[in-house]
Image (cartoon, rainbow, N blue to C red; front, side, top):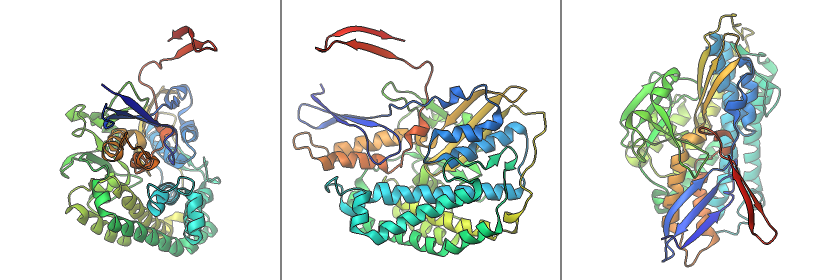
Length: 477
């Protein structure tokens, strides 16, 4: 019998809205925890009937934090619908925009959302334990954090004319080339940004070393892992094949984007609007067919990173668990910063490519469409799927989105439960205990506004209540 229920609402320092309910037994110990995602966006349904070429602009409105990820995944799906292959310069430019997105998103999460817990401690006064507190405590570090995010956003703006919701990709390519002026301005700041990335890595590694026992036991659990890889098993964020490994590091599958539904299915629970993706061949089985995505997931499936400085850090990361998958959730922060370093190095490589200034930026679609397309990309938060069907005129008839945060739904739910059982004591409850539960979720940098969609018909309940609390009427759909 559940004696008492604690509710954390809202979960703070994440994108979107969620709550956690912690059920205590008669002794005040945690019996069960639920991670509830109550948002509903319905983007898939209202896209129906729109021309397919509008999808890169429509779907990025799902979110203001990671619009570029949806913009690019939609463009790749539209390429497939149109049956066109973008020219190489267009692919380079799309990837460059993606690197800007990774830099700004990862930088924002670490410094603005996660760092307050690390710098001040989980039990610090909430009035201080925030980004304003960081600015007051270390204004030099705070300025570097702002500059790193600005740098990523300006890459997006220089390509797509806006930092948020850019207009850049079109079926078969991009809408405008990169100017030599913009290329040179990005290059001029790269060394400074790399130094900031290295400083951030040193910060998280120092914190992990000082708190090793906590890190090793904080939301640490076996799971599968998913991410994009190239032909040699190297880290890829823009294109590649999807690889899934199990908790021991054994490869379960590697497949192309079009085949994703043979390997990924979605489970539904009544207490959340967010679905629970899992590895289809094993059936729904918590801990066996469920997997994690995002920085930790990607570094647990790749064999190497294709840029030198990030690869050296990756080698150190792999030593954490003797070459096997790294399980503690707090290592998401270390993995995230290794990816920032990779994105900065990859930006330099892209800008050094002679094709980056080419005007050959689009292959125009023919009138005959394939009528189906899948686009997959590694969003900062993990593997993102866009899947479209159209009629012969190119009007959307079906949309399926499996969003990065959705892939991590089971992992966030599990992490919150493990941390609640380890730290929450209903007999002497403190704010810091509950903050640890939130911090477990923050490891995954969830973007819940992106990830919610419905299974079947959405229920709707309306209750009419009198001033004295008496229920007068109740209707439901």
